Image (cartoon, rainbow, N blue to C red; front, side):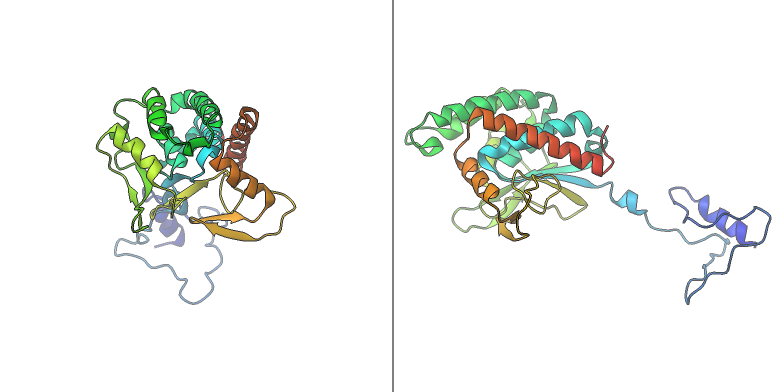
Length: 290
């Protein structure tokens, strides 16, 4: 069989991208012979090339999104989620799973189950942070029920069937406080159970990486991440904090404090804009922007 027929046979196989090769006239001489040992094409009994595995682009269709634990810096996540929802539909349609820890899992839940309510979640976060700033010891003030306030706010945002929409698609990092063993939860008995899981994680695994596909990582801390601030003029020294590779920088130390004690509304608005902008940069770099 002529070489051209073998090559066309391979190209006609459905779902197979032909390898790029120099163009040759349809009835002209075959291209230069393959060089190197073992590079000769194998033919099947039908004369066609053996079926190849999926291309690299096909394998990369399995995308996950993971939002890091970050306390009150979750406003950065909301900015990033807003950018992904507005300009990253090309990415989101390929996302198979969402993951997160603590505040990160809250934002992952909203993006998965109620993305049209991200702005409502944003406004609730501003009010929630203002309320905590008025407390003597912040969220740790005796008598202040952090969980009750969080639940009441999220009840107005999440759909009633949020736990069903999140079933097997949302993976929340949970830490057993006695054994300090970490595991990912992807089944939720109720919406209340889903909200409770947000507070249980982040102690030992603040950035869940799922075992299958590519996990796009998002964090308000500068480090080795896909979407994050990029601190300038710092030494390239990293520390691992709850499985997050963070840059050792003054700016990150400030962020750690802000994660525990919410900054002013003006600063939180700035964090939101930074999250939005960093996500846009990522979408442009990966050719996912639209």
